[in-house]
View 1 (tube, helix red, strand yellow):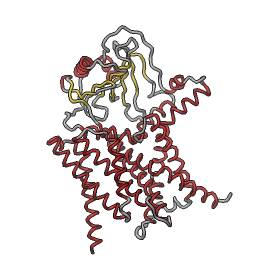
View 2 (cartoon, helix red, strand yellow):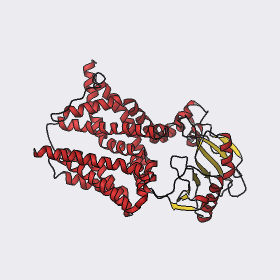
View 3 (tube, rainbow, N blue to C red):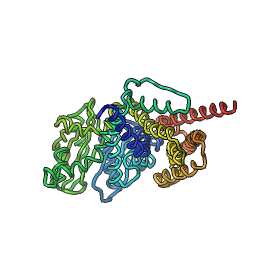
View 4 (cartoon, rainbow, N blue to C red):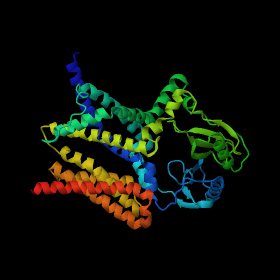
Length: 473
């Protein structure tokens, strides 16, 4: 088989794979690029909560006691989330409810981040049932890797033309060059995102396969080979000594940053304390320290110094979400993630512009692309004042926009209208945010999100105004 034949077959495979997954990939990539800032969004949703990275053991112990006294719900876990976790707020929670902690250890506001959770669920599960959604999204991660590799085989000159960019005409060349350039420049990142994304959902399938092949169907035995198994304890029932456990970690791992503390199986003889500690200069999520109910040290998870494979698997989260170098890595991941979003969009744009026919897809595609950020913004506005199912609102809004898109035969006019709608929605949201939160709307927690949103709105308005002036001249 000659190189020309390989190129043609690769191009065909690349096109059909791209058509199949581009709409889903766009939704996953856009929401994932935004979800990089999920901690910032959580702060933004509740800007009135006092922030500080400082905490003391007395406050932690008092908060834990107050929470347990207030909530006697049956729960499998109790958590203390420390203000060094990326959100400068101390939180105490169980499997059902979470509270911010005031000075002195009293319980503050209930933690509510409905919009952020909706966004993260969109990225991880496409708002499907979690077991199904995780596997589906992970499958798209594997297909992304196939798309990247087939793209390189399909375009032999893709490296040579790495800095070629043409504008004007019908926009076909511009879309081709954007698609190819961003694909080349960010391909290592995109491959990494594909591999790590595939891991999260497909790992469960791999565990079943390996357990059937080598462990007589014992899935837990496979999990225990990768993740340190939980200790088996029989203890008297008493309140866990979380303060003593924290003191041990602060003494023996002073360079580490406490992320959160979990009491597993509380109020049972098997309960134990586990503290997750971020390691400076390492990609692993944490090193884990385990203690019995009295705060006596038992063991570490051995993720920091364990086998290489174990360290790699425990690094998947930070690699996928860019949570390893503070704001700098998040900004980098956002830019690279938006490049992948543009690649998903331009791939379909190229196909549409090359077609000799025009049908409803020509209206639906720009409606979907620009309608998605519009409905996300509208959902955030609703979330300020109305208790509503945000996931249902997003999908219902998209259906409405797609239906309206069929009435506009000029795709460029449709795009212009949706960009204007996005700008207006952003400004309405910011106005509503200021009305609801008052002075708190000018805190760091608020401005770190609202300022970029305002700049985006004014940019879209400026571009729209220039286009209108150009059309009238």
